[in-house]
Length: 129
Figure (tube, rainbow, N blue to C red):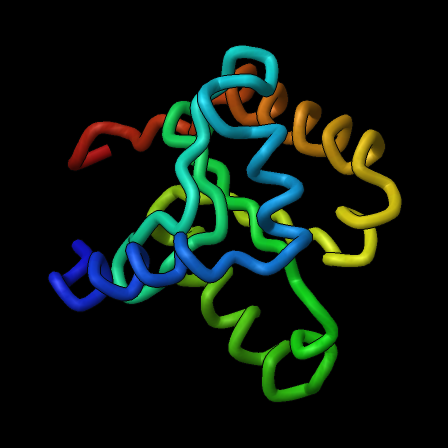
């Protein structure tokens, strides 16, 4: 569960979105994208997700060049692994692709949402089996 500091940070992040994040948000906000609701700068545990679809348990991260460093890559892997333990799938988009290939990015997001909604998580067997 996010702490109160995460909510404060998420609120601040909403005011300082990067241009690619703002461009993508203009397509996702207010259920404009195929009637699917997304949240922006949504806290989950210790992390703040760029965009999150609760129905599909899908996080979308828009990564700029800073994510190309080895240290950032390792942090991203840890974050993605932790979110997976919470049942959240993460898709990463290059900021440059959001800037130059928005239609393709939206198609990719649509397929990811469809796959998550049509492929429910596996059901655990009852205890003792």
